[in-house]
Length: 166
Image 1 (tube, rainbow, N blue to C red):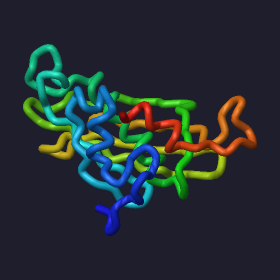
Image 2: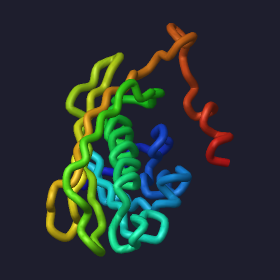
Image 3: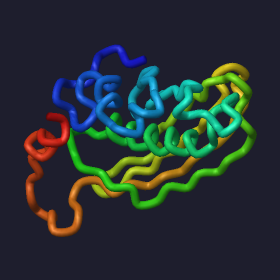
């Protein structure tokens, strides 16, 4: 857990990452829970729920686990950024290993391994909250900052995102 909260208005996690996740439709629907952050690292829990359950209803669905990996990876990039910036996923590779435990939540930890002015690279793992068994891992790459047509332009991220959170 970080000693100090994120700066108010930080794009897009804001000062309260849990409140941010409530505004992201799939994160809200699946019930993601923000468990904390350290510099460059996000920790997010996926509770077993009706929305996240496999067809048998007894365990977390593997597709919901992939959504968890995707969300935690992008959160780790935002935590690592020195200032607000836009990001875009360039590549996301996930490997599924074991089957989720019956009745267990899934915990994902994602860490930004590399960040420069153009790219970020993140590694993540998802494990059973009950046993710690590794279930999946991910590697992702993000473009940071300028996007097509944006080179040399200053982006007002607060004005850009206001309609999305109103």
